[in-house]
Image (cartoon, rainbow, N blue to C red):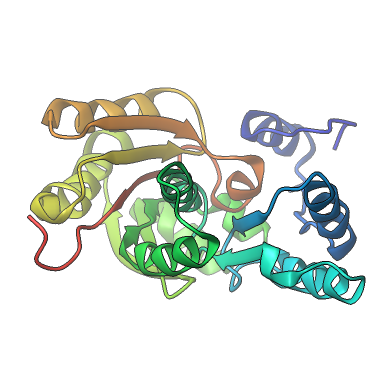
Length: 257
């Protein structure tokens, strides 16, 4: 791509349309993590680090390797807490929000790590795809599946389970007018009483009508304290293509009112 240090989803889609080439993603290296961690530690702060699921990216294993290298260099590894989010996109943001809450409440590193490793099990990360074009370009679905989905107007639902993306229901019909509504009903309305109402993300790979509609659906319920519409970064967008939309929230603990 062009010499941009920060590539957003709109830039990625524009580049792919102009060139017919889908850019590849790469993980932060062990050396990247070492340099970043060392600077924080040398300033006197401890580290709590998380990111995309270890089953979807090597970033977590690279962070682990960096901690081991720093430990060998004399740094206390207990000052570097690495949490595998087992999620992606704003599923990870839910983890970060929880970490911030615990820090503000004065929790210790041990307490934060234990709490978040329970909390992440209740995060629901899912989305539906408008098109399989980018997955096809990236070799993640066959040409037959891609063309069949186009002909039948199928829009797959994917969700995170145990750190992996797994297929769910296939929605059929007009994406903006029918599928988005059905996905919302299945994944938000049908279990509304089980969802923690503090925060919900409506996350889309593109700005515009789909994101606005999804956010309005949630706001119209009038039950969530915070509704945060967000645009996914270029890494996620490169896999899912334009107008991929998700509702990401946290489920209540069992027995919680």
